[in-house]
View 1 (cartoon, rainbow, N blue to C red):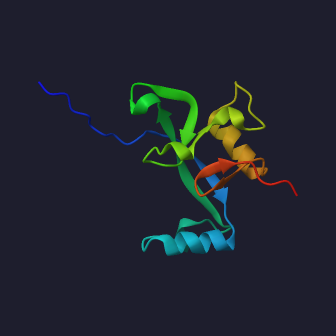
View 2 (view 1 turned 30 degrees about the horizontal axis):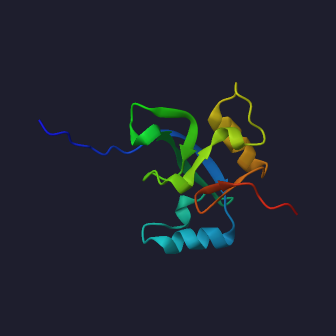
Length: 119
């Protein structure tokens, strides 16, 4: 019997709220016809899903500390939660990431987690 690979979308781990600028909101709305300002809360926040990452793309090998915003699992969008300046091993990963985003310790730039430039 031939072996067949079947693609399955990654499992959503949690959601985070990302604060957006007016330019980011407009870029989101311009990106696709189904996008509009109703995607954002009244303060310009956008809730986005964060997905689990799997070693070698195998659903049975979910990685503990790695996540992505990209449902297609492109490597460039993956990040290690341990890179957060506020990382402590005993806290829930969604709370750590939301705290870091809220306090501007990190940010997402085109779905890539980065540390913001120093003023």
